[in-house]
Length: 301
Image (cartoon, rainbow, N blue to C red; front, side, top):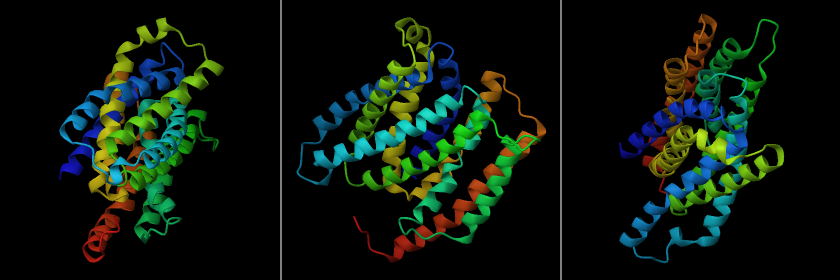
């Protein structure tokens, strides 16, 4: 239950974070915004890391492996940079509501990519995927059978979000999760700022003007949301976590409509409903399968 609540809180925070991400780009470029918010998120973890260190003396166990932490953080941070960049740039060309639902496709891609890692999956995954793809068609494909540029970036980004979820699942039980979160934020932030100085023109005035969006996207969405994901995943299978995190799409739609004044026509609403249904169908039975497997198979950790 504790892991479930952490993941649900992360979903709500991220869903509403699409609003902050849209508003922040009124004052700065997407890479500048990402660089500042992820570094701010990393800084927000310092008090927590200090508090944990003061309460828990160092011990020579698997969570104190600096090399594994660095490798995991570099891999997770690089994948996070790719996913966050596609999402942030895509938001320049699509709405927060649509971006939220399309990004949610990653929960279907998790078990599909899991096949490469020899994870078992059921027919419901493929049924759910087909329903979700039908929803994507209604949501994003126009009458002349083209997809918007922003929506396409979100679809590609969903693949990287799925990879990121699997990377965290691999490392979160091998290293200290808060430290892993901090390292990946620093890596993602530095890569984003390096890109910003090459293709954008970052200014202090833009950062100051967009401080409210940065504060939410950095301290809350990154510092709190991603940390809840890392810690929450320690007690949940990635497919189980994906079920709960899929509610991010609902919170994104609510935030876009209520806070940004976005509008979803009937076709888009049908698409959103089909996508959410497909996401849930593809995951629910996997949760039952994992529970029965966990009860029968000894832990490998």
